[in-house]
Image (tube, rainbow, N blue to C red; front, top):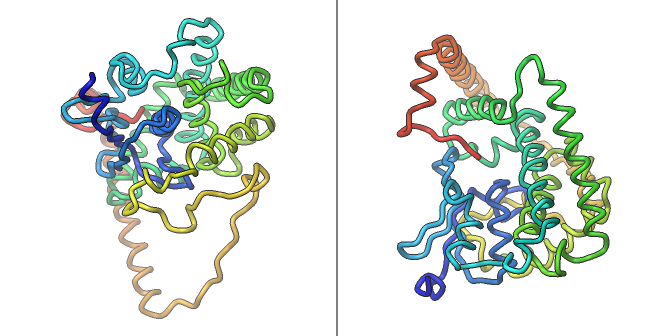
Length: 327
């Protein structure tokens, strides 16, 4: 892999928003891992395949490390000898169990909040805002079904599973808060993939989830974890981030990184002054509403037909050439 090491890497992720270089919860830890390693890389956004389980991926010439292979991008980079921050801790039992807790309990909590425990605005902005409305809405409803299947949620156990997911998240935050104390990193006073995973989780939870988020509230209850996230964000993400974030995909000022300490994460955005709409704008808006209603009806009819046909559902789910699920 010497040729790969000498060539600059390219990281392909979903787009930036909510003041993050990429707001995708599976992409952000990979971005942070490369920033921790201080290796040069270009950042590119893929806006046309929001449901691809290959994203994120890292490429360099003929070399590609996909999200859905070898346990993920970070594991591929380590196994292939390109970037390995875990060489001194990968066999430490406490490190293994702590990382497993982040990758399972906290990942489940984010999945639940993103697809089932919120109004869907965050998911839409991250994954579907660049797609035509009917397609984005269809993919969103499809992913809700996938999330329920992966989390084992049914009509009969929905309330119990919700309580279990949040209880495990609370236990994880408590254990991580105790482990980190006032240190800069969780193990050996240096960054590892564990830090990349939790920092990505923390920044996503604090900045991409709504203020009403239960998970966000549980994280904010641990001030040292919030301070840990804020400190590393300033050191590794905000410092020199302009050199890695593609300028032509920059978000509007309303999505700019939030400045200041943890107290700013609980503040409400200021409302913009309203202006009077012209008659032409009112007419256009009225016609647009009619169009959206007809599109919604078409999508709902399609979904009802899809759910009513077992044969159609099996064919749809097993189509490898069709749409893939988002991890």
